[in-house]
Image (cartoon, rainbow, N blue to C red):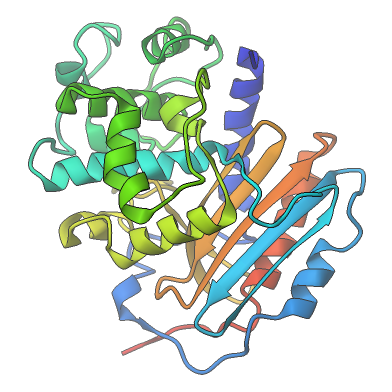
Length: 345
């Protein structure tokens, strides 16, 4: 079994990638209104730029990579280095799993079975220490719960993971700070089970995987990263899921809007749907999520109007996280090269 330290370090790596992977600052809540963006004519997917971004693998920091880019202006996919399987090979998507979990939660909100304002302690009584201030479901999804860093986390059932994670350290006041924490999504998965009376896996299957025909997306038996990071998928399934999510195929309009709405908390990086908005070097805004697990570091990003969607996965060596992030930046920049800045109307 993967040890607890691997998961603690993965959450720190994912948080760093979430902040830095696409070479820019997080966009304020009022700076990226997807419905108002209209793009002008632009170049097709730049295959030369993508090949250049993937060149030189393996190196000391990344053993191999896969990139798949699609949109109305064409598509391109390829692999390099020690990624020896096809582009559509399945891989552990890590924290991109959180987008699947937040989708199920927001579906339940849209059905009136749950509210983002519901206190977690009321839904899951006795799981968190009684001294903790009330934490809302929305604070779980947006990483503003105030839960302490999970330095004491140990593998086990979702309940055991949560209890071990809060067995040491002190939380901050909920809704006052933003801190990426995988424990938020263990709790979100448990909320899904409590509200529906069914397993997280069954809800995910019936609400997302089967309706979208995601035949290569699953939760492996015994994977204790579970609802926060346990899914296996491939580039085609991720592109289909993310496209449907952004387009509104999985959520009602009010809940879809939450995908692009960070909470009013200083430094909030994540929306109520678990997405983050980034600036590319040319100022273009893309939305997405990163994730790392079992020797894979991944990302899925799209322009708000879905003119281009990119999925990547790398095989890092673990020698230098900064160099790993630098390679991811190059891949992302190449994937969206040629896209113009949107114009407001």
